[in-house]
Image (cartoon, rainbow, N blue to C red; front, side, top):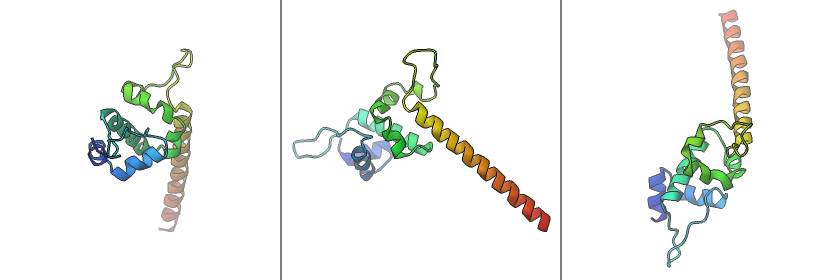
Length: 128
């Protein structure tokens, strides 16, 4: 399928597909005789995984750090929610360190916002 159809099937835009390709998240698809990109179901599935991970708060740079393993999440979607078992060789999942760092950053931001909220509530209740 052509880029517009693939983008629509993945819930995004042709521009996003080209961006993912430029950033190394999406391998360059084969091209037709006229030079147009030709996408298949595998590429569409990969774009859906990319979009899901971006929606969960990872960045394009985060995804680039394990772009070579994004296909594992397409081929084995059950791994998305699994945590690696450190005692089992090869049980590491793609981007484990990136995800752990992003979760730590979110936790820190939640703590900061909670303190900010508490301070604001205390301040407004003291004056009111």
